[in-house]
Image 1 (tube, helix red, strand yellow):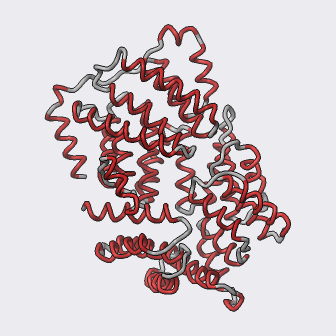
Image 2 (cartoon, one colour):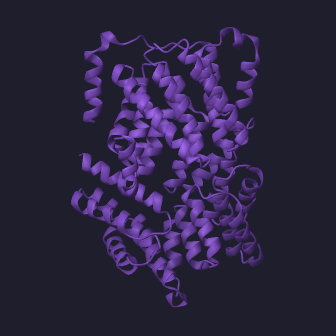
Length: 494
């Protein structure tokens, strides 16, 4: 909050030097509405008309580039990425040869370069993607330093500062080498400030949905703040609903255990998205139905595997199809999807890494523990704990199964707010699993940190967040380390 207040005072102090609020014409507002509803054909139809060529300006070009970015992000197709990159080069040329003196010229350049970087990184072009992030960061820093009243620079700076602050210790040297600095707290406060300023700016229509989604995503992912992230999206969607913000709301519902609402909302958005198929919705619906142990979960997961032409979450979808077969006692189908899991998709996400690891291990999950896990992931905590309570633990043959059983009891107990018992169980999991390669001990440490954070015991919270990073874990390492580092960053900046 102190940073927001400082930025506000700074804005008042030098307000007379500020440029007038940017105005967008009807064509720009029409285009961006279609962009956030993923109506890419409608965007193409509008720009193919003669009126677009007559009225075309930098605003329109940047909005069309936004559309190309979202299409490339959703499709993961090289052809869509190439179209986007070629158009981006034309925009950069236009900025250099006619708009270089604008106070926002470096922001516009960063928009093109940073979006390109995100697509490259998602498509595992890490080196060129990292170079583009570096270029964008330097442009944003110098641009905002020269034009501190142009608050929109903080849209991208806030994102980068928050992500920089969440980088695990093992990779901190890269951040230092590239000259980056920032913290989760700094980034979130900068995005909060942008949201405040957007209320009285026409930039609200162009960037508002993105800033809302970025802020909510970072709060939910890095700080696990359900109330702030969910209420922010709800308030926005009440008057400014779009497919983008609707999709973010579904993700939040799923993350925080509102599985039934997530399924209902996803089915409605899927029905609404008639112009461009969002296959990610099939993945979300299929996974959520599997968490509820529905009979038709496989239909949506198969739609994702066979319909989506990209790679992200394909291994995870195959793994979930295998799980669906296993709990329905279809051994041949389980084996088929595990084989598919090992050869389809890529390992960009932690979910895909974990899925491939299981497929290559050849170890079949314990059905009782698997059902408990699925119910827990759907937010059905009482059902999950009841199932665990009815298990005769003598059926577990491996150290992993014994540790996982204790871990799943701890997690369900925690979510049912039996905090004293949950603490003891988490400590037991840490002690039993501290030398094992599984993620159970590390996540137990992370969750203990969360408990102490809510109890305002900063020293204990820091202790267990740091322990989470140190503990071995061959599964979910990136996401666990990132969450722990984010909370350490937040506590250290207080």
